[in-house]
Image (cartoon, rainbow, N blue to C red):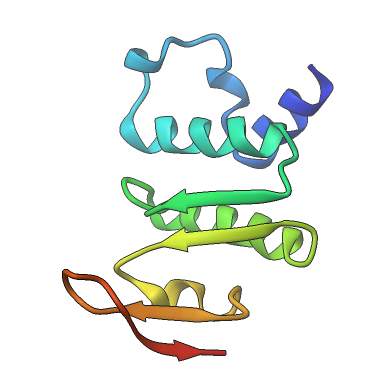
Length: 107
């Protein structure tokens, strides 16, 4: 419960802990999903388009959290906007259209 409250506070969703998922916005639901994953303290975190439906303030807040976790957790992030993650990433893989292949790697 302590870890849930800590992560909920970090993601600014503490007021929504007792809401049902269909009672909150898409952006808040996205933050709830990230909070669920972070609460488990995983070694690897897979994030598929983590900033979809988030406002700019939420994006910055979550990016700050991801930056604080850098070096503690491996994150695999899929996105159509890799520039958002350049400062966070050790490596960025660019893929070709189907059939997908690695086109370029930036370190």
